[in-house]
Length: 285
Ligand code: AMP
Ligand code: ZN
Ligand code: FE
Ligand code: FE
Image 1: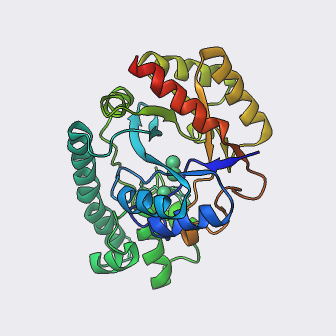
Image 2: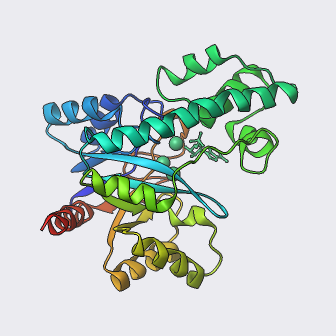
């Protein structure tokens, strides 16, 4: 059996390993393919693709877009798109400036809450990559305001907490269209995060996104139990969607998640990559 990991983050967003390091680790763990899926950026892809070529491991271009929906946010993974697409670049630029506007607002709130942090600290922690809440959480931990990253999110940064500022500006339809326009496929990331309640409600949400062009579901995921995997695989069969999977590796930023194996039991079959490629080939016809 060949395995892959189709959900990983690098220093281009909030992972702690460089794109080259992630690809090298994937090769060393014997994975047949790895996708780099940084939040709202494709900046890590050239280094990842180069490293893949030199080590002889397949690297898929990917990204993870933050999307706004009525009751919160949603993540949509893009795969096999052209990172140089001009529409994609334009959309990412808009999303990235929305993120850049948001960070100082979070810092302002934290200051009022008695937790001042400088922008310079964030730049050092993010090693030049796009700054997000995990970097802010790390800075809070370094300053001793909290005892863990989890506490920083729970008390200050998560949705509904006092320093939370929303950032998503894309709707699902625009996110899916942007990925398609760049020649790629759009996959619903980690459905467990939707907190959808009943399977029927998940299906209801899904049908709307399928109408908008959704291509697949991330069925295999570090935080999916067997029941969730089976629910997602069943929906993929019913609606002829591609099933994918990945660990959501962030390196030391989420030390409990390991490349390829998640919290230990994850295995993503390489057939997910083949299914993505087949669907892309059919879309081109
Ligand atoms: P942002 O893109 O700035 O909104 O931050 C999103 C990142 O924060 C993702 O990588 C999430 O995994 C991470 N994150 C969200 N909630 C938590 C949490 N409660 N604990 C740790 N990390 C979290
Ligand atoms: Zn992340
Ligand atoms: Fe995500
Ligand atoms: Fe992710």
